[in-house]
Image 1 (cartoon, rainbow, N blue to C red):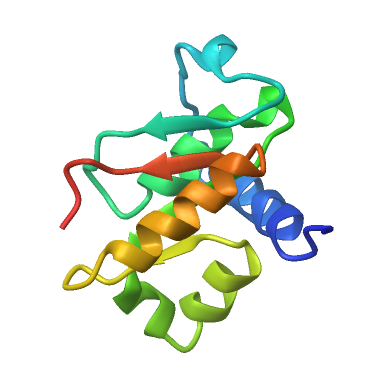
Image 2: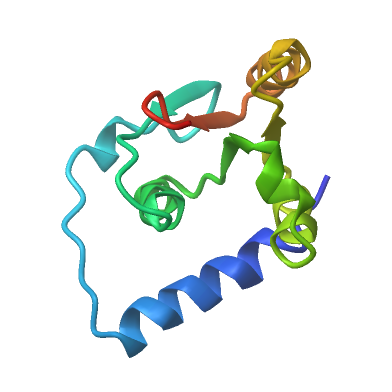
Length: 119
């Protein structure tokens, strides 16, 4: 299935970094496989973590499917973007369905992004 939402969002984020003159040094991007399932575990220190971590996968030409709290998916602007990028909604009171969704994505060869320190 083609990604119609994710590539334009990546372009916007890269333009945002450039506009703000932000530069990042990403170490270990060579460890992100070019194909097959993988889990990308990221420290969670800000609301921009997903955008920075997603940038790390770009050299491998992969898109990361992030797991994020369901409240983000309920937001009128962020929600449609999150669903359009096929990220995984996590209900913190009932995590079973999100775990199953992550497993399905991994079985399909996707990269799943998780924030072990997140709320």
